[in-house]
Image (cartoon, rainbow, N blue to C red):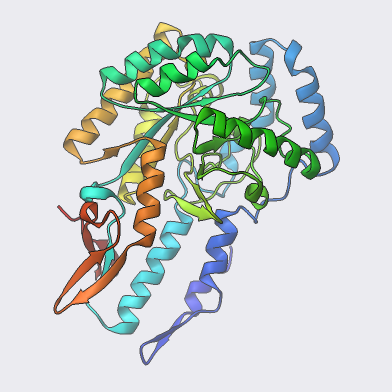
Amino acid sequence: MLYDALDEVEINNGTTYLPFDPWQVADNLLRERYVDDWRSEGFMLALSKLYYFIRPVLSAGMRRLLQKVYMKGWDRLPFPRWPVDCSVDNLLGRLLLMSLKSNRVERIPFIWFWPEGASSCAIVTHDVETELGRNFCPTLMDIDDRFGIKSSFQIIPEQRYDVSPEFLTSIRKRGFELAVHDLNHDGHLYRDRGEFLERAVKINSYGKQFEAQGFRAAVLYRKQLWYDALHFSYDMSVPNVAHLDPQRGGCCTVMPYFLGNILELPVTTTQDYTLFYILNDFSIDLWKKQIEIIMEKHGLISFIVHPDYVVRPSERAIYEGLLGFLSRLREEKGVWVATPGEVNSWWRQRAEMTLLENGEDWQIEGPGSERARLAYASEKDGRLILSHPT
């Protein structure tokens, strides 16, 4: 059994003494420092090179078979916790509880997570991987619009398919967002530092050409320590739990967080490809379970749904079922269904806002504060209670 350092916490004279640095713990989880660099050396590096060398000649069925073999035993991994890990959120919650006790106050004010007091936030993103997916984008926009949901399309700039100015304009004109999806989706973006820097120059250029503020790497590969070379406002490459991704790990939070100047919008639900072809689950039951856990933390519910994998009527019906469920959450539970760009703008504004005491009340100041809501953290029966502003 692992040792629980929280057992050694002491509270004396209004001061909480911890046997560890909680901010270092949180940062190590957010940046996935607890995971070895699985592609840096040895067998896994050779296996990765071999897979991507032969991948172009493999059938879809053979790729799925190899992926299932690689994923074998994923459900026995103890950490991060499947299907959603909230370790960072729970740690910060425990610290807030300790602060309440050590300061002997009934409640602590804070700026609510989402604008207008929304209970949680949801975003839908589409990684366009093939020519088939690109050609399906107009239909996918029609489907999203039918449910009143604007999404983001991640476009691969090179090699996979033709990216015409007309195609990019057709997405923007309909109120959808564009993000850059890797460079050529060959799986080698983070293999070598020098090669990465060369690719980053091209990727940044495509970001300007696409008028895109966001980026996502292929296959959710990531190396957060290199993000300073990417000139984007936000990234969407870090999964909450990565048991079913080639690169294991996970950031263990359901909230956006900053990596230097880049805001990370973590992927907090299972990708459609994984759901359909790895788990063989053709329903939204897992997504609904993950949504429930995320909403308990008032977090970010983020989806990756590829146009390439919802072309067939059966998968398309499942995706439409998800959109219908999100629409009901928006109407009945006050979930803010937004685009990644809108979330990025809000989270940056919120980070710059300040709470000022005004007599017995508190006031929120700063750009965007008219959309912000005051909330309070309190304790009840040893549990942290976050008031939900209306």
